[in-house]
Image 1: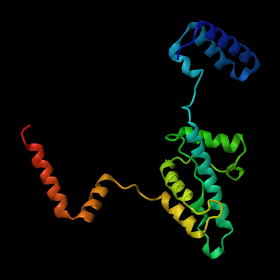
Image 2 (image 1 turned 90 degrees about the vertical axis):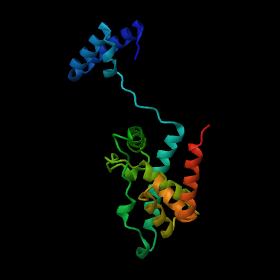
Image 3 (image 1 turned 30 degrees about the vertical axis):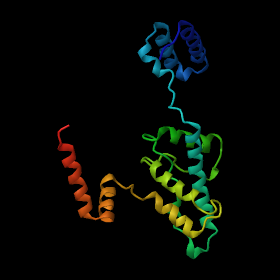
Image 4 (image 1 turned 180 degrees about the vertical axis):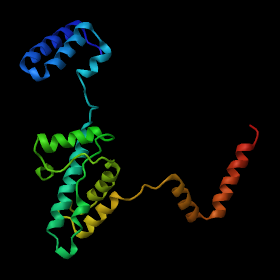
Length: 201
């Protein structure tokens, strides 16, 4: 981070004011003023810490994920008791504060600061494990539903199941291709490619 002399002077004056207004933090503000006055640029990060930005699309994705969980829970509640999905499987776990930090912070801002989706205000929004991939698979299924706001028991089950689906690996794709086209054809193709690659050019 680069700060001009003017920037340093303005910030130093601001910290001097804060030092007097907030005695409990006076020592910290005094330390920050010294950093600015002496131009210790390697320490500027202590003063200003900015999160990585979220794009408009990523912000919309967070909102969609939260709204999807609201609809899963609301629609499940109006189903016949015998058809309902276990409410525990519909719980919104939030995002990983370490690996999905920007998503976690934005979700917290929406719920706690803007007071949206108030039903999630009392839950811990730091999942402490990565959730985004699973949520994205769920979103695909939610978007594919006939009505996102009148989900059937089948819809809810399908959406919840998508979260725990493992993505198909490259090896699994190869095995699937082998089963579909036959081992002989797959091996023959590989041998032909090997022979072709060994020809002098």
